Image 1 (tube, helix red, strand yellow):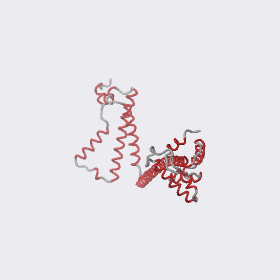
Image 2 (image 1 turned 30 degrees about the horizontal axis):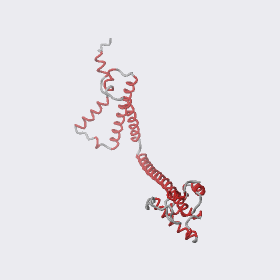
Image 3 (image 1 turned 135 degrees about the vertical axis):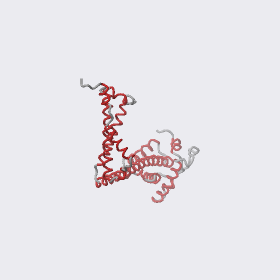
Image 4 (image 1 turned 90 degrees about the vertical axis):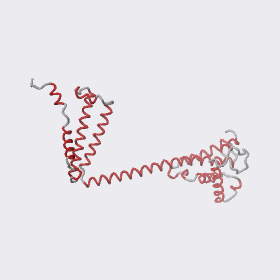
Length: 271
């Protein structure tokens, strides 16, 4: 036997961390009048660097103890504090994350003045770039939604004008319009006709197909274009709910503004 009792060995193992004595000494120095915050910049940077080192080592010690506890290898006298932790696995994950953050902060203390300025500039540029990319993505999403809504309105306008101006069997009308819309759907988004004013786009399509009331078709191309634009805009207001469509007469006169649903009902079921 070496003359040392079990109680003495336990007390020796339970000695506080040497970091505690160092921090206590620094606290006593401040109480006695020391002003470390007035030290030269390099001295204060060195002190902060040492504080980060102590924090990282203490966190690593705690993480190792929790790891040993989970593995069942931690001595009984060290289990008392860890057994009070509700979720050791979550605590270990938080410690690991803190160690990584402290390590990254330590690396910044190693930077020179030039490196620090370069990093700050790069971070600012990255933030501006990310903001611009977010704005571009938002604008792209808004353009996609607007194009989809314009597409729906254009198709509704052209169908409404065709139903109120020509008398073809429903199946033939659908085939004619489907072929027209298929060509538009194949266009690239950047040059798609659906990017513009839906009323103007619908007027161009109606002019291409020769749709419109008889009084419009007897005019010149420019006059027909202007009249069709006014007609499709009136249809657009009706489709948006400006005019009540439920009370419209199914036998509306040639060229009158009628809703697509009312006109389709007047045409009868598909052939």
